[in-house]
Length: 191
Image (cartoon, rainbow, N blue to C red; front, side, top):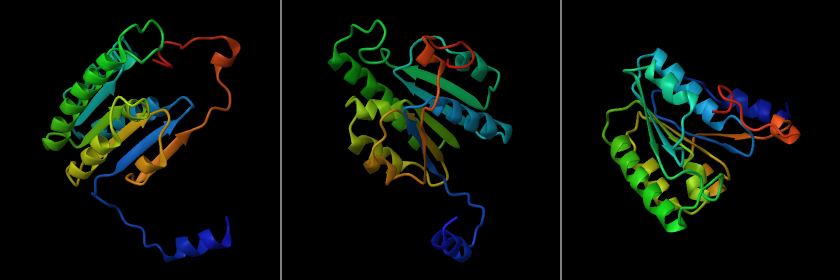
C-alpha cells in the first residue's frame, strides 16, 4: 500500500451508515447480475424489501424461480424485448426504446414509492450505453430515490458520468471464461 493511501486511511473515521447507496456493477466480465442477486439475497436475510427489475431479459433464468423462494421479501420483474441485435432479435430499435422506457417508468415509480429498501436495476447500464435510455433519466432516478434506499445498477459499458453519481463502482474484468473455448452459457451458473 502506498504511503499516500496509508495517510488517507489514518484520517478516515469509519462508521456504519443507514444512508442508501448507489452501487454500479459494470464491465465486460461475468458476475454483474450475480453480484446484485447476492446483495438481494443478503438483504432478504435481514427482511429488507427488495425489487429486481431486469431490462432486456425476457427469457427463463434460474433467478426467476429462485426469487420465488425469497418471497415475500424479494420480487423480480422482467421488462424488454430481449437484448438488441443479440440471439434472434428482429425487433426494430424504436420498439426496444419504447419498451425500455416503459420499464424505466415502472422502475422510477417503484423506486420513489418508498415500498422498497433495495432496488436492483439489472442491465440498466447496458440500456443506457445502448441508447435505449438517457443519462438524464438515470441521473434523475438516482437523485429522486429515497435517502435510505440502496440502488444497484448493473450492465456492460458503464461510463464515468454514471460513476460520478455512484457511491460504489465495481468493474468485472474477464480473465478466463469457458466461452473462449466454445462453450455457451451454463444453466444455474450464467442464467
